[in-house]
Length: 591
Image (cartoon, rainbow, N blue to C red):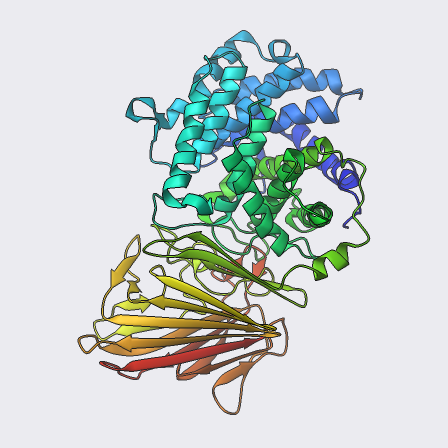
C-alpha cells in the first residue's frame, strides 16, 4: 500500500518491522537463524557492523519515550559486545562506527558500550585494514568506490577522538583524483581503473559521500555537488508511477531501487540542486520507491526482505548468507533517505497532486556520456507511455563485462530484466567462428552517435574490434568491424547490426538468444518471429538470424531475475558461412 507521505510509511510500516528485527536479534543471540540461514556465518562479512548501526537507531529513535527504552539500552550494550568480536570488513566497519557515533551524539556511548568492548572496536573499526598508507593511501584489492568507505570510517574515527584529523581529507582527495583522471569534466566514477564500468554505484557514490560530509560537519566540495546534480538528472529521468529504480548492472533489484532514494534525498538536504518543480517530482518518486520497498521487497511470510526466493535472484555478492545484514542495510537506507527529507523541511509533506503531470513533462529521450577517449561509455533512457527503458554502454573491466545485466541492450524493470551473474547474451548477436571462438559487439565501442526525429530516437555505435567472450575480462578481437543501430519508436525497439568480416576470419554461425517474461509464444507463419499471448512484450521478429526454437524457460532458478522468473526462451541460429563480406542481422521487439 503506497501512502501519500513518506513519514506515514516510515512510522506505520517500517518502524514495526525494524523494532521486531531488533528484538529478534537480541533474543536469538549468536544462534539467530533467518530463513534457514545462521546469520552469523563466515560469508556474512559485514553483519556485525550492520547490527550495531541499525540497533542503535532503533533504540535511540523508535524506542525512546516508550516503556521499552531502558531495556533496549541495556540489551543494545550486550548486543554490541556480542558482535564486537566478529570479523569486521569495509562496509561493516563503516556501519559499526556510524552506530557508535549515533550513541556519542546522544551522549550515551560510554553508558552503553563497556570499556573492554570499546577497545576491541577501536582496533577493529579501522580503515587501514583495506588501505595502505605507506603506498600513498592505495586501496588493497578493492574497487575505487571503497575510497568513499575509507573516507567515512576515517572521518568518524576523528570525530570519536580515536585519531587526529587529516586522514579523511587525504582519502577524499584520492577519490576525487580518480574521478578526475578517468572521467574528467564528465564527473562520473569509473568502478575500475579506467576500464570503463559505470553502473549503479557510479551514480550513487556522490550521494553517499555528500551524506557523510554533511553528517560529519565538513564542507562539501563543489565537484561533489556537480556529481550529485548529474546523478539527480539521471534519476529524475527514471521517475515513474511504480517506484522502480535502476534496471542494469550489479546489485540491481532492491538496491537498484534504494539508489533512487539515496540520491534524491541527499540532494534535497544539500540544497541548491533542484530547479523549478524537480524537488516535487523527486519527492513523489521517492515515496513510490519507498512503497515498493515495503510492499514488494519485504516478504511478510518470510519476515524478511526477499531477494532470493519465490523466483527472485540476486548476484553472488548479495547471497542469502547475508540475509540479516541485507535487511538491516536496506532498512537503514530507507531511514537515512527519510531523514534527509526531514532535514530538508519535508517531514510533513504529501506527494503533489500534480505528480502525474510532472511525469508527463519529463523529456522522452535522454543520453549522457560517462567517459570519452579510446572507448566511449554512456547511458540512454527512453520513456514511452509508462515504459522507462535504459540502454547502458558500460561493460568494460573484468568479471562483469560478459554478464547480461551489463550488456548494451534495452532493459526495463518487470519488462526485460536480466539474470544476475549469467552470460546468456540476452538480445545480443553472437558470431561463432570456425575455430569455435565466440564474438560479441560489446565493450569496445569507439563512437556513439544519437539522432532525435519526433518520436523516433536513434543510437548508432561504431566498433572496429569485437569482444572475444573468453576469460575474466574483455579481449579485443581483430578482423570484424561492427555498426549497431538502435531505433526507439512508440511501442517498438529495433536493433540492426552490420558486421564487416575480413577475409582472414571465417564466421560459421550467427546466433541470438532472447529470454523474456512473456509467455504463450507461437511462431509467426512467416517463420521470422514469435508472438506472445501473455506479457508486456507482444512480438519478436528477426532478419538474418535463421530458424528459431521456442522453449519454456527452466524453473530451476537459472532464469530467475531480481524481480521474478523469466518464462520463455527463444533461440535463433543461422549456420551461414561468412568470410570477406558483410553480414547484416536485425531484431525488432514490440511491446
